[in-house]
Image 1 (spheres, helix red, strand yellow):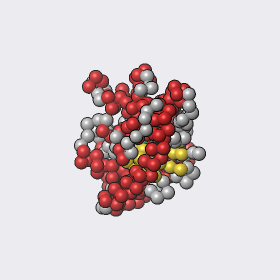
Image 2 (cartoon, rainbow, N blue to C red; image 1 turned 60 degrees about the vertical axis):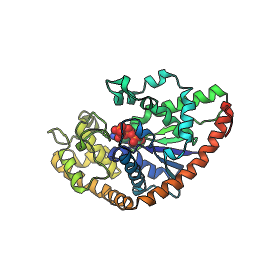
Image 3 (cartoon, rainbow, N blue to C red; image 1 turned 30 degrees about the vertical axis):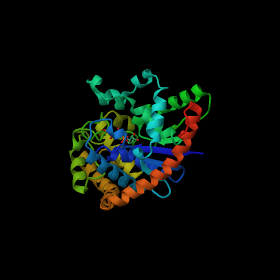
Image 4 (cartoon, rainbow, N blue to C red; image 1 turned 90 degrees about the vertical axis):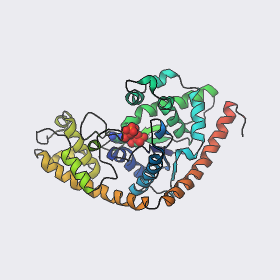
Length: 332
Ligand code: AQP
């Protein structure tokens, strides 16, 4: 049986990269797979955080999923900390994961920065928890943006290590699903850096909570070069900021970069940006409006998450019973 698991951290608001790189693909995939979508709140405490903001962001991310088109009845939508199995399985996997595997993770190096000795163990072990998230549900497919590819490979290695160590085929090796034109949306201020929730500049990203004016301002101020739009992909790829805006346009429209260049080659960026603003507002505006409507009733969002949490827990408990038997832990 094919099953999808994927999640987003409730740190700050979701942005266009989260939407185009992952969330929009989930909406499509929910029709093909049994799907579990998680708000990964335990991952959000790996860096300093504000408890009130975390709770609000958890609801906001759930609202974004639903507003983007995830059906919480047909799929399981819940927050990670509701199901204790994530932490339990993570510990069991930690005992089998060589430090050398974790030392290779580039996201830890980026996030820990120069002061690595002061970084928390949770930040270091983040990819092990992510492997547990996926494998607790024996998910076969994981739709993510390109930045998560390395973590997914580690999840496959951990699944293989567990199966080999205990001589039992307990876990599938999950496949990353990196889909669409915009697998890596870049910062609007620097075309060589990923668009990211934690970037200090709000002008680097379009948030799903931004209104039409904010979207327009951010796109108009987006860094570009003085040349008009090129005609070929080769020329485009030599200009990271231009490539990023064309990629965003193509992904929002559901076409390809070549299609976009076919229409805009030779045009100045000022004109192109105006068209991009109209497109972005038309595509994102309804999602933002629906998120705002849902956020007016936080108790209803909590009810949806709890219902999803109960369904997730039932699957997780069956996996954990099997894991306990295989590892030799007395069942509760
Ligand atoms: N820039 C991006 N382009 C395409 N996909 C992206 N994703 C994130 N940024 C981009 C995808 O969104 C999903 C959820 O990501 P996450 O919330 O788990 O955290 P992240 O990847 O660490 O996202 P951020 O925005 O960069 O957060 P911070 O700044 O807190 O680290 C994943 O599928 C991811 O691939």
